[in-house]
Image 1 (cartoon, rainbow, N blue to C red):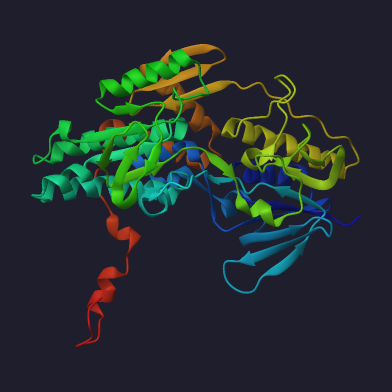
Image 2 (cartoon, helix red, strand yellow):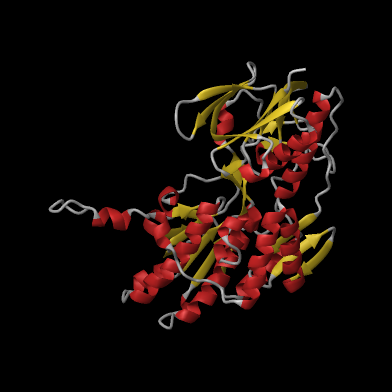
Length: 443
């Protein structure tokens, strides 16, 4: 028989794990696995806070796709359209004209993007925290603001430079805030011009609690720990404007802040708008527990989805509940989906995905954390150890596990690197200035 072509759209947690499992379960005579993603790596997002804080190398928080997916065909580009009626995807390579790729099965897993609101100034002043580029930028920016504050004689400039605002009290926001504060506290030892009480860290959360994935007492503990570090925690408060860096909150307060980090949730990738797949009211692809796309009561043959962009029923809860957009579900859904696709290709029936959420772990900086696993609650150092152990075990490849452990081991012995490499964000600036023709106006 002719091998089936399985097209994997996106190489995040779902795409990478599904493609890797399919390439191992199916022979080349049974299927060809083709992966399309504009990036040459998968970002292990739970490690972004540690990468930003300098606890691990940024390169070690990403997984090279071509190294891991040796038996898959890689296409560096972006899927701009899927016409499932024709079983055709339009792909725009990173260079050159677009092309159409036919398939027998498609895994739609482009993931999610930051869920923003039409807040004045957010587009111009804000930065997200979903990619390795954003994590590196935030690290360099925070350290750069310390340099600005130490050098300026202007009190207003100094105050704005030392005010760091994070919007969103979920895992991404809490971990990013805690790790950045930890890093800045270490860095301040080398800034005799600055005092710790001059640095202001503000968390803005629209609801009345943080870390909604864990019980309220764990969220309350987290708030208490952050407040002990003199952080300004604003619950039941919304960001209303940040034009020109002036933060205005719904509680009436306003202040200048050079750093505004937006971590207030995610939404399915807008790429789904260019497909003919059924969507729910939150714009997610509707799925059966088998991870097959479903339109009403009708299975969409050959179409599969999982992860942040899919509405997958959670069979461990009451009807009407869906799996949360977490890495824990994504990697397990990917494995079940790969097994189901292999089963369908071999003429067998797919099996429902069912997984009871194990719990959650979160780092609050070096040697600090919260964890709630199988109903057992831990705080402080034990929770931090569990956080590291769990995520080290989940990051793909032995290569990355070893590198991360080496980074952590060295961090116990050596001091944290707290130097900003801001030139990374505009590397041609110095050369452009030096190579200006004689007499040409400088820009």
